[in-house]
Image 1: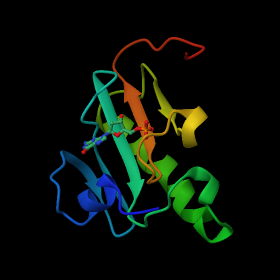
Image 2 (image 1 turned 180 degrees about the horizontal axis):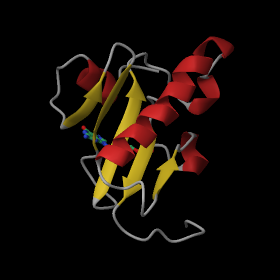
Image 3 (image 1 turned 90 degrees about the vertical axis):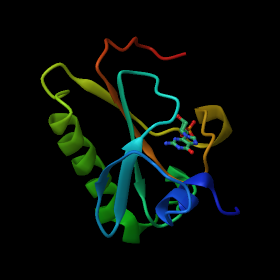
Image 4 (image 1 turned 180 degrees about the vertical axis):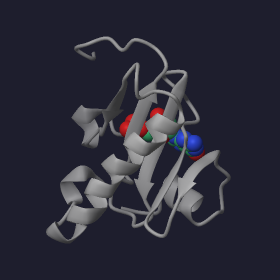
Length: 114
Ligand code: DGP
């Protein structure tokens, strides 16, 4: 799998609307938001899909959830609620093959999704 647009964002070659960064993770606003708040939390390591996570990624994967919850609180979403989604490969609707956690909120989400 070649370099993705998200690797270029991590490298600073493409700009993003950043909301969080540390040595392992980056979070930025989705360019095609599906909700009033739509943020992507990604590892800096170019892991293609959730299916490519290995045992050594256990802490990293957990941190993605914790950072998502922290951002949700900062964005004022915690009380009303929000949705976290990871799409995996074609049937999951994944377009960018660099693992990312969608954080969406600010409106009532329908269930089940299409
Ligand atoms: P997915 O279908 O799960 O792979 O979602 C990919 C998301 O990435 C989609 O909601 C649009 C977003 N996206 C694609 N290219 C860019 C970009 O260059 N910048 C930003 N901020 N988001 C992007």
